[in-house]
Length: 244
Image (cartoon, rainbow, N blue to C red; front, side, top):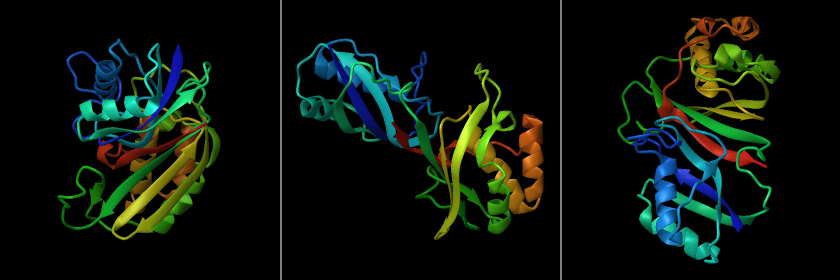
């Protein structure tokens, strides 16, 4: 039995997220179906984590086991012929028997893009969150510094999660202006449900002047989701890399 590691890139716009769901079109289901056609066997893939509906990935990682001796290139290229244009296996590797896409991961890097523009952008509407109002980027940066480190991030977790340990290490949160885009790049050892989008939503409120930079530290300490800002839309979020 071989264990195979996949790196996937996808546009999540038309999907109900990563995880297989009854009567829903998901990334996991599409990849499993494509691999099953190539390998002529039932395939179950395990991802590094779930991405929500509308969220994209440049470097999602998954693994699966197979009894097939088909060369890796044939598996990758064959599966890609069956996958739709908005999903692709970009790398395929043999993995150690004890490798696990989720449990072997040491961290993840996410990128969130905000389009700062008065008019909508037909070309980037599925990949950014547009703000027509100006925001104070320096205040956003000041507020973001309060979030770096090891904290209980309950205030930024959406309801619906059964995870009991809310402590995560956010090692990096870079905020940079790239043309019309304001980019938020997160690196951490793990993220709670919708944590990145809730942090971005809160920092945008800081940029608008609705929350002071100093308040963000209090919001974090309160562990109270109702004190933080709204959830930023899914379209702006992309999983860049899973770290092992």
